[in-house]
Length: 134
Image 1 (spheres, rainbow, N blue to C red):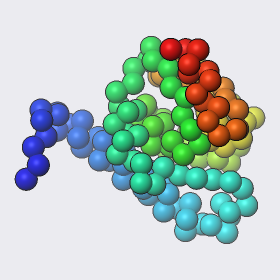
Image 2 (image 1 turned 180 degrees about the vertical axis):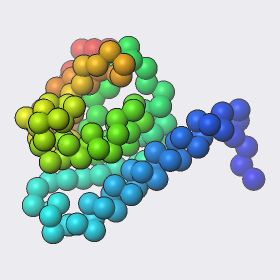
Image 3 (image 1 turned 90 degrees about the vertical axis):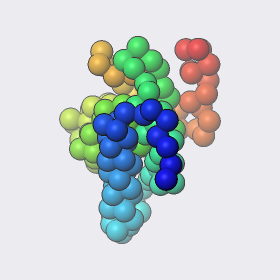
Image 4 (image 1 turned 90 degrees about the horizontal axis):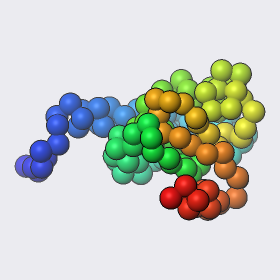
């Protein structure tokens, strides 16, 4: 049996719940491919554990620039599946941009969560602003 190296059981349970939530969202997108296939969407499938672990470590004073496949990081920082769905469907209540940016391009400036700078669609472009933040 694996040793948990002192990680709090409550945190482990929360991480597992978030990983399962991310997987359930991925399954939902794939089940509804006829609808979700009309636009580009990629989920964090296969990356849930490392992304949730990262998200749970980030504090409100931190900055993060998630890539388009980083839904699990967003869940880890405290975003809810409903928040991600609002962005997916470009709804006015989307917490990232009020439905004005392309899906998986989150930006966030809330006092209670890590900051997410607005970013470009080009692959790898999240590296440039985060270099400046560092």
